[in-house]
Amino acid sequence: MKAFLIAVVTAIVIAIAWAGVLNKVQEPVSEAFATQGVRL
Amino acid sequence: MEWSWVMASVGKLLRLTLGAWAVVLLVALALPAQAQQPSSVNPTASSVKEQQLLQELNRIQGRVTIPDQRSSVLEQPAGRDWRNFRDVTLRWIGGIAILGMLAALIIFYLTRGMVKIEGGRSGRSIVRFNGFERTVHWMTATCFIVLALSGLNITFGRPLLIPLIGLEAFSEWSQWAKYAHNYLSFPFSIGVIVIFLMWIGGNIPNKLDVDWIRRGGGLVGGDHPPAYRFNAGQKFMYWVVVLGGGAVAASGYLLMFPFYASGIEGMQIASVVHSVVAVLFVAAMIAHIYIGTIGMEGAFEAMGSGTVDVNWAKEHHSLWLEQQKAREAEGNARSAAAAPAE
Image 1 (cartoon, rainbow over the protein chains, first blue to last red):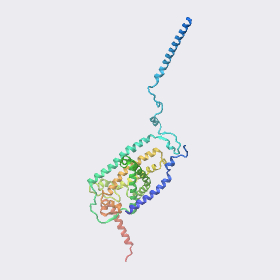
Image 2: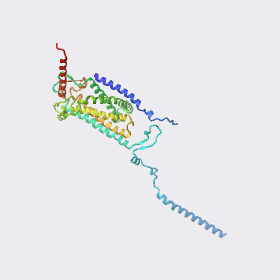
Image 3: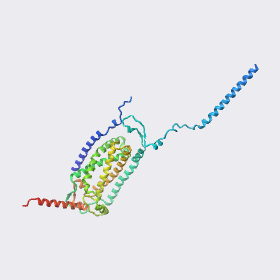
Image 4: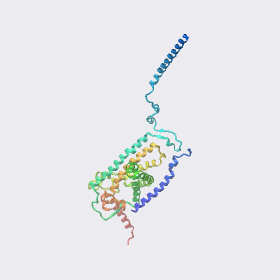
């Protein structure tokens, strides 16, 4: 049970760290598909 | 007076005749042109058909003003094959693999039942997996379960879940499932790498595995073929995890970082590899979970508490048990020799 709980916590910690990396590396949709031009 | 009337009449007749001839001539000239006109007008008859374009080009591309120039690809013929694979073929492969495995295990359980410890429990236990090994196993396993459910949602969610929970709930669940799928991929990948390094020593196939398979591995019949720490069945699972996990991780990262390492064609291939390996992986893991829980008495304890009953070890891993006993005896002898004489 102890090993299982440590495993789950470890997975969550690594996942949160990975989420941070992903959000930094990947360009959000709002930026990738946007333009600086203004359409009036 | 009479002469002028005659001249006027002749002139009138001449004008009428010339007018009639002119009308006849116009009609005669117009007829061939009219004969060439189609009965119904087709405004796109001379334009290039979509199918002709797709045959000539590998994509139909235009121009866009937004920064992402890749969005200018309007149509890519291979995309249709990929979509058909994802919507039809993959569902068949996944359905047959997963439901087929479940059906086979149910039939096996109903006919064979749980594989019992024949000698009964001895009451003595031996350490099978240490804390680190179990932690890595459970980290990989929990990540796998979330990844499998969130991944199967992509393939089977629409036809199975939308009728049950509705569009809004499905949309919300799918969004969270996608986040979980992306974020838990990394601890899963780390787990696969550590498993590879941690257990590679005991998982190299050898001659003993051939004998183990030939004798049914103790699952078929009451035989207990000898095995070291990992038998042929466990070695098979190990390589499924290492190779299958490696394949889904590599193809998954290609999809997670679109256009970083490949174009759209490469991503379509990655998607096919990822999904096919993943559904086969899920089917294999269902068998692994079965044999580790209700399929075999005493097996879960190996990853639960980390220890197994000695009789279980004797029946399923007799050579490993001998190794452990020899190591223990060697350790005892060494400590006895190191102890000061009285």
